[in-house]
Image (cartoon, rainbow, N blue to C red; front, side):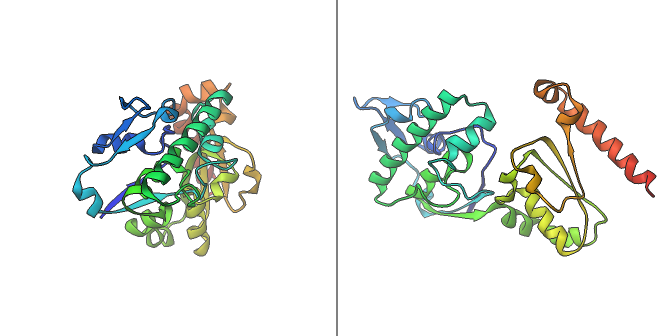
Length: 248
């Protein structure tokens, strides 16, 4: 049994890189081997899986992911997540076309559909390669990790819970860690404070947090916030702790 925790990957190649590392080979229309990437997915014409280890086909892969997004479309990997990692408008189109081509080839090779499985759009579509070839299940990442850590037992005895995310937005409610933490804490009436890099679209929908502390509020620009992230987080954490102490 292998647990894979995916997300925040800055990759958009459908897990083809992982398959390559495991021994799979990807061929272009001339039968020449190519290294798969977001840029080259559309060039793939064939997949050789005979060199994948036998043990991989006997294993059970549990893929923990925090979102339910499908692979393609307006809520898919390219349009929702790649811009968060720096993709331009042109890049998004290339990634979408590449993933669409790649998943079509996967489905033709394995004989089943994987593109619409909830969570298949996470981490640049990482799971689709594993869903196509191996005994794989997608599981809610927060619950899986929270159960392993016995997180609720720890939250029950806490006075305050602190969580965080790079960008808090309406997407946070789609199974992200801060939202899961908030739901557990609410069961025991424990307040939750969230730290984030910036507030995204729909952040006003995130009801229930005691406070949301945003690094960008104390920075001159996004670039400044990124450059001084560690210092800003330390400063804001210190100031918030002092504020709580002064309140007694």
